[in-house]
Image 1 (cartoon, rainbow, N blue to C red):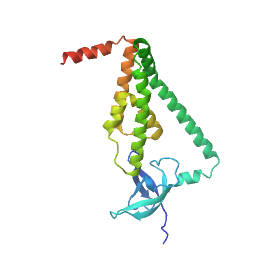
Image 2 (cartoon, rainbow, N blue to C red):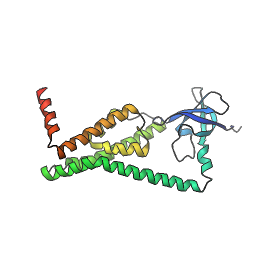
Image 3 (cartoon, rainbow, N blue to C red):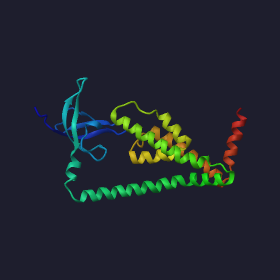
Image 4 (cartoon, rainbow, N blue to C red):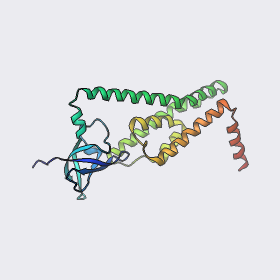
Amino acid sequence: MKLAFHKGQLTIWNDDRGFGFIQPNDASQKVFLHITALKDVNRRPQVGDLICYQLTVSKDGKVRACNAFIEEVKSKSLSSAAPNKSISRTVEKSSSLALNTFLLSLLPGLGSIHLALTTGNPIPLILYPVMSFITFSLYADDKSRAQQGQWRRQENTLHLCEFMGGWLGGFVAQQRLRHKSSKVSYQVVFWVIAILHIVFWLDWLFFGKVLINLFFSIASRGK
């Protein structure tokens, strides 16, 4: 027997964990939706999307959505203007991301070059791109694990990689993958790490290492 399709609005969506709840149009009980139940979709679901779905019963006896798709995407695909708008938005987002990444990397980049030229120490110049690549890869892996319902990467691991110089890669991953970008507690720690790096190079380049020397002075007194 072929399962009937139902329609409803996505009223709750946790993008980090890849699941949410649909409010059916008939005002019945909300239906659980996992990201793996969505078919033929070219973007992440958002609260307010109209979802077309079938119902199935999981092993624990709970009703959930299956063979679902975002009806908005289906209808937009019939419009010839939609692809052009989508491409335009993609280009605009990419340009904005490139500009923001350049601005954030300006001080660390100049500071690393200055450090290499004045002291012969190229470690930061090498560490930033290497750790950024590693951190981006960990974000992508954690995103994939979340979508598949597998064990996640510990947030402390991601923060450690960011602190070790990979925070720029973390920033790009947050914007490109839409991962960890909406979790407030995670964002607070992330931006504290980013600001520490920026302040370090700001002090190195323009303030004659005043803050750095003050930090080590306070640290030595505390011993």
